[in-house]
Each structure stands twice: as structure tokens, then as C-alpha cells.
Amino acid sequence: MDRNRAKDASEGIAPMGITALNETVLSNQPESRYECPVCLNWLRDPVITTCGHKFCKSCITSWLQNSGHCPIDNINLSMKVDIFPDNYTKREIQEQRMNCPFSAKGCTVKVTPLDLDAHIAVCEYNQPETSSQPEIHIPCSFKPAGCKETFDSQDEMNQHLNNDTQSHMNLLMNAYSEMKINNDMSNANMDTKEQEAMALWDAPDKDGNQTSSPPLNNTSALIRALYERVVVLEQRNREQDIVIANISKQLSAFAVAKMKQNNEMLLRYCMGNYVWRIDNFKTRLDAMLKDHYKMLYSPGFYTSPNGYRFCVRLNISPQNTHFFALHVHLMKTENDDCLEWPFNGRISFVLVNQVYPELSQRDTMMSNTNLKAFSKPATEICVRGFGYTEYAVLGDVIRNGFVKDDVLIIRVNIKCV
Image (cartoon, rainbow, N blue to C red; front, side, top):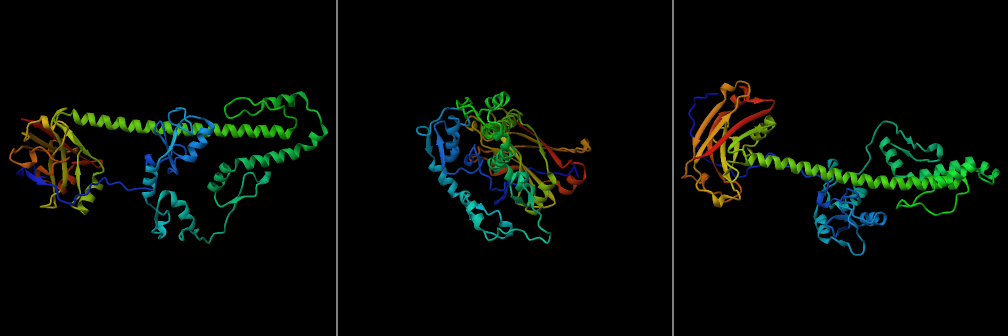
């Protein structure tokens, strides 16, 4: 790179039809505003509580029958006076369209999230994969107790075990009863230790209170009490899992908000000295070389806490595709009415050589108050920028130590005069 090559700063306009490099790809996962905090799925027949939270009607109904308070903030709720239909959210969800999970096989149908299950059941592309290997069926772990179900994979069996706990407990209870029935018939009266066991395992109700049922008088009743206790404990475990999941989501959102706040503080109090680290540079460069309308913008940074706000633009030069173009753009702030216009100051660029620092490229330019690039911005970012249309040769930047660990560093200093 020729550091002595003369470059003249000029006003530049961002080409029309620019495309940001950080476009997001929409997924079929529900947004947080459409997600039920209980079932963690799309809201079905959504309702809203007086404390401002949204749930599936069936989910909050079942929850309130067991607990009586909101799953999010533990405020006491009543189904009769505190739950209302949320027709606005229902209409928004019905307007959403999702791709069929079998789109990779050729299905082009797009349906609402609530109709997706019904479509999958009748989708012509929902066909099992053919295989020349013989089918292998995995028997249920409760086969010795009498369960006759078989499965094609371990995941299917695990799902079966999670969903059919009650039927498996019934099988165990029946098997245990048959094994002990003869002893029960021969011993009409229970001994002292069996009576103690019956009293010990008397199942509590869902509020944790002991029931006042009469003493159990046979082994089948003991197993039934054990089963009821297992069901209660599983329900409590499920409720705790939901609470923990909600707390984890809230902590994650708080961490993201805190990080964003810290970044905004650094940008506002950098006093016009900003170090722009462009990571994944090779991927971003390939995208710009493929489409010259794509370009990179830095975050907006301030010359003082209540001063001017600028960002930096890096893109392929529209005049010579072997060069980078580098410009600064003014951005709108809440204090623009208190600032002096047009902006008058000195702008310095340093293209940092991370291998040979002494070869870093340094350039300084003064603002031109006659250009629109330094007038009070009328939009979020001023369309016209100021800088170098042919700032640096692409090949020199890539080969001569300016890119290290796939990161390019540009240091900017903007000072008012």
C-alpha cells in the first residue's frame, strides 16, 4: 500500500438499493409476544390477565386450578374477573404465515402457526423415508410389566415414557397386586409395620395438606397411595420447571439489556475517539465483492455526551472496484436543536496495521461547511457522507498485515473546531 499516495476527501452518497449485511432469517419459532409462558408454544385462544401477561386459555385455566396465582409474578388471579380474551393478539397470530416443515421435500404451502399441526397431518410430503435396512423395533422398558408398545427410535420411546407415566404406574400396580394377592388373602389383619407404612404414605392433596381418608387396609391401597404421591410430586416438579424457565429467560433478557446499555454508554462517552473492530471480515468482504451495493456501517458514536453523532461507512469503491471507500455520516440525535450547524471540525482515520504498526495508514481531513454532508440531518442517518472514494487498495489491506484473526481495525477521531 502506498502511504504517500495523495487522496482528496470528498462528499459521497450511499448508493441506492443498499442491503445491510446483518439481515436476519425468519424462523418458525414464535416471537416472545406470541409465546405462552406455560407451554412455551404459540398462543392458542390467547387471553390476557389484569397484571398484563398473555397465556393460552387452556394453560392458564389449568394453572389457576392448581395454584390460583399468575405464573410470572405470583399475583392472585381469578378466572371470572381477572382473565380476558385477547382478540388483538389472536388476529395477529392468524395473520402469521409459516413454511411447512416438509418444504425441503417440495411442499410450498404456508399456513398460520395454529393450523400447522393440521396441515402436517394431511401434507402429501409427510411420508416416511424409505430404507433398504430391516426395521428395528425397540420394546418399551415396561414390557416385563405388560406394556406392548414398540418404537423405531430411542427418542420415541423416551417420549412414550414421559407421556404414559400413569398407564405404566397402573401396570406396576397390577403386577405388584397379583404378586402379593395371595399373601393379602392369607393375612386378614395387617401387622404393626404395615399400618405404619400406610399412614406414612397417605397422599397429600395438591395444596400440600394431608388428606383425612380412612386408614388403608391392603397392599393395593398402599400402591395407589404411592402412585398418587408420585403424580403430585411430578406436578410440582413441572410447575417448578416452568418457574425456573421463566426466570432464566428474564435473566437472559436482563443480561442482553445490560450489555446493550454498556455499549451505548461507551459510544456516547468516547469523546469522538472510536475504534471500529470489523470481525468476520473475510465473510463480509466476500459479500461486498459479490454485491457492490452492500456496505458496512459502524455503530453511531458521539463527539461528546450531548454532541454530534457520527458513523463510519466502508464499502467497495463504485469508481474503482480494486479500492475501499471510507466515509463518515452524520446521524440524528435528541440534541440536534441545541447544536451549531453546519458541523465544523477535523476528522482523522487510522487504518491499523496489526502486524507492523509503523505501516498503519493515517489520513486527516477538515469538514466543509458548504456541503450537505455536514448540515443538520433530516433522517436517522444523513444520506450524504464525507471521506475517500478510493481510500485503500483491497489487495494491500488483505495481504500486508491489516487483517489479523479475521478482524480489521479502523480508528476514527472527530473533533469539533
